[in-house]
Amino acid sequence: MGARVITITSGKGGVGKTTATANLSAALASLNQRVACIDADIGLRNLDVVMGLENRIVYDLVDVVEGRCKLRQAMVKDKRVPDLYLLPAAQTRDKTAISPQDMVVVTNQLRDDFDLILIDSPAGIEWGFRNALAPADEVVVITNPEVSAVRDADRIIGLVEAEDRHVPVSLVINRVKPEMVRRGDMLSVDDVMDILAIRLLGVIPEDEMILISSNRGAPLVLDNERSLAGEAFLNIARRLTGEKVPLLRLEQKGGFLRRLSRMFGSSNAMPGE
Amino acid sequence: MDDSITLKGIKDGLLVTIRSEGKWSDMAGRLAAIIDSQGEFFRGARVTLALGDRDVRRGELASVQALLAQRGVTLTGIVSESASTGGSARKLGLRTGLSIADLIDPHEAPTQPLKPPPIDSEERGTQGVLVRRTLRNGRTVHSAGHVVVLGDVNAGAVVTAVGDVIVWGRLRGTVHAGVEGDESAVVCALDLSPTQLRIAGYLTISPDERRGRPRPEKALVRNGRIEAETWE
Image (cartoon, rainbow over all chains, first blue to last red; front, top):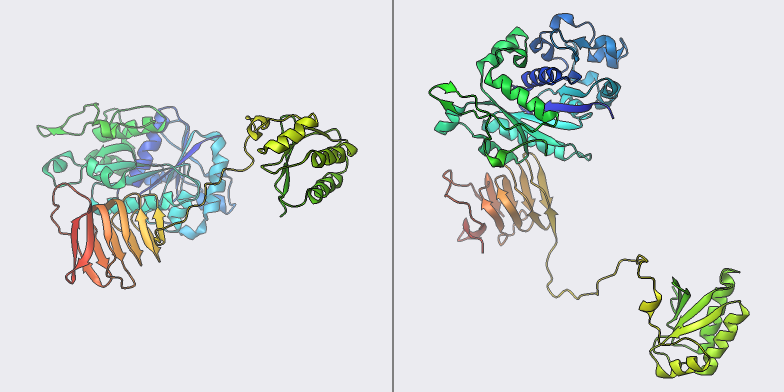
């Protein structure tokens, strides 16, 4: 059987795919899962930077596919969590350097040694997306509560659903600002779910700690002093392992985010089903 | 194919059904030929004859019994709706009063699904395409007839039809009914909020303001423009 392959994608760029991949990978590894993450964004690699592993890269995905090194030589071990590895993208090539079939071959070689393989998909719906989708057992679509991001998520979900093989899709809504939602200036979780109508895996609040941790190359979920966003990522990771975790309550009160782990509402009651 | 004589395995041997209305001797000859063509396969078999409502005389039945016996096959009984045939059989010591339902093993799966009786379609109707899923952004459907969607049509999806478009769900995408100029084409949806709606050469867009609770509506061309009315 081996590892489950989860592809993280969005259609639209800049919604937080790479941040989500880095944080979910670290969170899953902290839950004692053996995790490999693969950066499928050939030519625009970022996952290594966000994970703080850029300076440890010797070989990359294209080197593996073109036979210049063994797969294990290209796997970069995380500096903070055991059992977390990164297969970096090539920076000097473009997406056509690898094919969907190559991705299937590479992930199949990793399946025996890991519990979960997360693939960070490039933006768009072309070659790079096809590469990232080919080996997927599941797809997690990241979107933001804005109309254009939701439209692109809808497009991506439609493309995944049109695959001959049945690939389950779930949704993460990133960068939600509860205060703006309350004022009616931002799509609510319910608004997004009304349009996309798929399984909701989690909701991540907008949090400047995300940007700070990305720049530092230190995924938020591994901080001792956890932010709400870090907690939300950890909850998603636990849901991915099959645990039932209620949605975080993101309401703002008195100018401060309240950390309440209560049910958000029965219609959004979640995972594991 | 000749189905005047058919054979079927039953609980107790074989059921041989005779549908032929022709001469008894011809039928007997064909039955003999079928058995002979299978070599030793029937030797030792016990056979029940199903004769429908045909009146069969005792002599005729006896000739078939003898013909079967020559081939090592025992005639054990008959299924018949004819009183005179039943009488003939009883005089030969054959089992009567059987029905086909008694003979067939109830646990045996039917070899063919039951075909519904033919119905003459009185309404002419027209052809169309049925889509049983939500059409997401970027998906397209076209039909030379009608299009029926069981699901939503999301913004960015495009549905075109030479005839009508029916959406059993929310219509938010772009829809064009009567693409080849049929102004009698209609567009119906449980929630009619298309990005753009066209019928034949007419075009309309949904009002920006939502009008409260969605209700089923039908759009059609009337008085030279597209109007929406409650879909009843």
